[in-house]
Image (cartoon, rainbow, N blue to C red; front, side, top):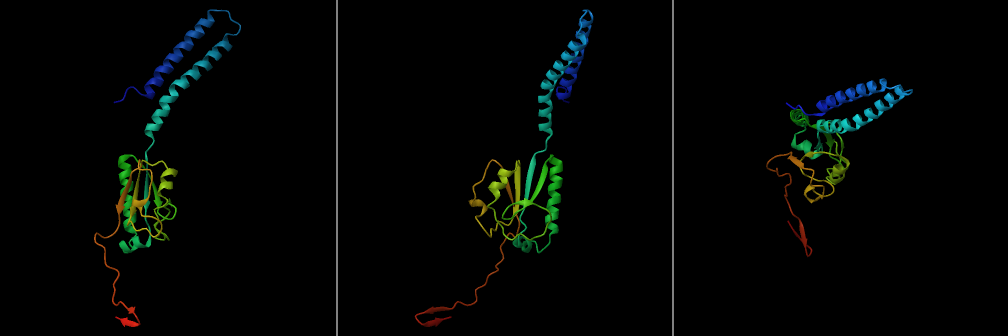
Length: 203
């Protein structure tokens, strides 16, 4: 149990503050001073300012400690993701529920985003991203103050560089969560090769 803390120090300071004011008022009453009320108010204001200056750092430190660390969750909602999930968007929603539970247990504040040419807030789970681009990741890190970032993607970039080739602030961890099959399916098949060599046709 924490005994020494902002509340404890505040109570002690208020007690001392009240005691000094009472003593000062009694001292003024012993003297026939014309402006004793003015002097008392002046002392009251000065002591109040001193107490605020003393207590404020404790309160500010306490607020900083209570502030939840922010975590960014970025979803890749491209067409390739839809194919991996067979169009079942419920999978993405279940992942978000898992993150919500994890954040509640660990006292994190989550922010959900959508991967695109520019990473933006996630408003819905529509798989309508025109491009899969990782080029905005450095700017995304600079624009925010996240403790860490989770990126859910199949890693397929349709424009720009692949994430492994992008330089960004490595002090902010980026946790990659892969989406897709363990083994890639063969989706291309070559049936015939027609090659013309010196006016001859080879099939």
